[in-house]
Amino acid sequence: MSEERPENGTNGANDSADEAQDKPRRRQARGERRIAQLLEAAANVFCTTGYTAASTNAIAREAGVSPGTLYQFFPNKEAIAVELGGRLMHQMRETYGEALAPVDDATPLEVAVAGAVDRFITFNCEHPVFFALMHGPDIPGRIAEQHDALHTNLLSRIEALLASLLPDTSPADITRVAHVCLGIYKAGLELVLAHEGAERDAYIQELKNAVIRYLAPMAAERTAAAL
Image (cartoon, helix red, strand yellow):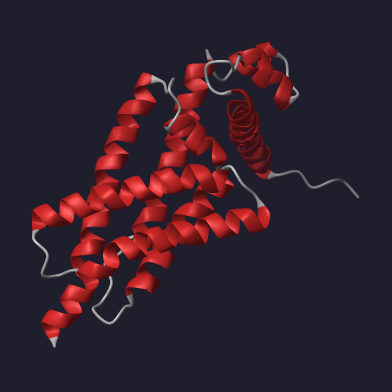
């Protein structure tokens, strides 16, 4: 019995076309996996040595690839840091979008503060390189610009949260309080990241207590005025 062949070779042509389309997709997927591997290695190196002391050779070695392979994707360590920082800042925007949503009047101050602090602390503990890059003395210029924009947006979100907690407070006072709250958080974050386990948990609680004790008198004034 003779083998039935596709009429005019149509099926064979379609298979060839599909295979031709699959090759670029496979190459793209391999490239994305390699980039993710290099960024993870860079995060480890930046956390260990800092940005200035890091080198592309060290990052390639951490990733288990040759420097030539690294240079196929990134021309230098600044490009790596910018890509890594950009991805982290995108994730951070999502985090503070969830953490700093305005709350209703019935939400206790302690609950609102704990919810916001927990989300930010979790993000920074999962991505310690974010603190290393964003708060180091040698942050690359492009990352510094992106971080300034992130900082401005973050302050606006904190102001919105505080306005929902302290509705009778003037806009100027809200802005000032937002700056102080962010300053307390940044100082506490450095202590939190310097510890692990039970000690880290204790510092997280101290950070929450510091913010709550700062805001409590203002919240008390709001409650008294409502009575």
